[in-house]
Image (cartoon, rainbow, N blue to C red; front, side):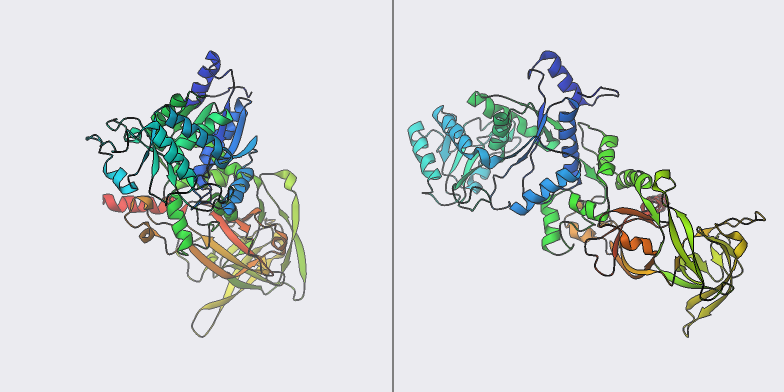
Length: 560
């Protein structure tokens, strides 16, 4: 068990108290129970980090359990993807489980519920059940089938299992209280008829348990001690407790915590699936998606996500976290770990007219100033270079400190250069700069200690590797797209910009897929799996947060 060195969040305090009272014999056993009906997103990452870290802290166990009780929506693809995501985040489960492992036990428990008079087979349709539930201020109406004899209920339930009845014709309902203040307790459905092929049990079953029935029983069967759920399950806790108490089986404790909500994104699997199915994105792993696979492809690191989750902490009340906090955690992690490289995304050619024609040299460049052990590399330098087009203005304004006619700047790791002339095409577009260099300034320092205000990155034209860069921005241009009537209207049309004529230093050709790297002055990038003969890099996050400045300007405009 880890030593407790800082303030405890409320779940830790609950477990600490349980260990003092030996409520669960000093055991701590958690689980992460996703439904395999889609890919995991950043919100799930919070639950993963919490469940696994709690088990690790107390020297306990954490199971990965798939709640596969809805065969229509679930696929093996999602099972594999979820396992990959959990492992990528840095966690190993003590056991891999499926709700379908317990289908027979769940059925047997349901038979016990019927035998005790606590469940009945109901012939009302789903719409009729909904219409008779009542409201928050009005009691529900009891089904006319509520008082069927136990023997008849057992017979009908067996025939439901044996496939005699069509989908939706009958359900098994718990007999609780149709006037209960918590509407989840108004004779909830325990089993429904569904003739559908299951990804694991195939066609063995044609009745499937509802989540509320399966959830508590799975926890009980597995010996879970603390069943950690997001806050929307708080209203379901009474039914969780009722089922386990009615059966008289081992009873874990359900504890709810605030889910993660991020600005400028959505956390609904249904909405995310719609984005994929309607081709608004390229797939579940599109780097604009908040899915773990999308974040991974974009260049996020497991450490950055775990650090972010630790920073925001565990609370009991829902709130919305700014996307900038996640991006800040990412920058902090990438700054420490990433090697630096030079790449030019919007190239403008520079000819150093006094550099000897046909000659070239190699210059020494630091891989990571934050990590001395990262060492240095050799960067080729020649007469013709590329710089960023945005780094030059023919007639620069007062506060533009980069290159202009007659101005001197430093080239990173290289020399001071001065722009003497520009070459333009027939449309007056600048196509080339003619500059001179000071050979005495090799390495970036002048012997006479004269200063320049800007250092530019560059790439040798002769050695440049052509590449495509995909600049990703936020998928939505409003803070809360999920609250809109049609969230698709909030899609940011500029969420993806393709740059096809980028130039990069030769060392980047050896970059590994998914390995983050800092393009000096531009931001953090990683090589995309689509990369072929021509490398493709995704922008993970820019060096600075442009959105924060934009939002501040927008707020200022509203006040004025």
